[in-house]
Length: 226
Image 1 (cartoon, rainbow, N blue to C red):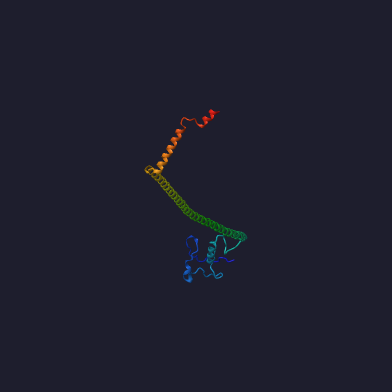
Image 2 (cartoon, rainbow, N blue to C red; image 1 turned 90 degrees about the vertical axis):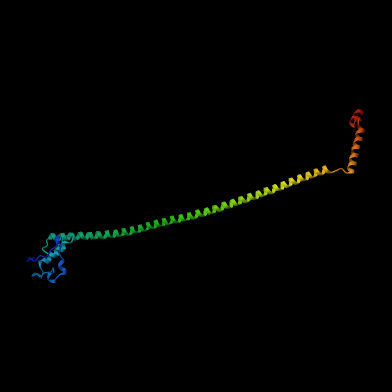
């Protein structure tokens, strides 16, 4: 293992103990990699490497002496990391399956919601058209019934007027005829034949009455004989 045989020049550090990388864009003579008699590197290089390793979430040694405890700890960390890797792999797969299923569920829920909304709009449109159609048909029906009743009433009125006219004309004609006949009878003078016939009939009745006056009738005669 590399031992730190000489105290190297400590590189400039930034606040907070973090590694300063401000020299990376400068002169090559001021680079982090310094000249060293042991492997050609200075111990500061390993210190810088350790600082970089310390930035990781776990403790890792990059130089110096290792003990059995360090190895055992690394093995435990490796096993723990393997278990975590396996768990995270299964967890990632499960989460991926869950998210895919959730997306599918949400997709179907959205599809159902859209179908319901579209159906509601279609039903509203159908009801609107139906209500307008029914209103138009009801208006036509009432117009037909009203016109029919008006026509029937008009015909009935015309019939009553016609019958009234006929009755009035008949009554008026009959009255005129009766008046005419009465006037004609009143104005008509008997003819000589009518006067002679009337006189003869009167004389015949007078003679007949004189003949049978005081004489019992046939019924009385039959009774008296019996």
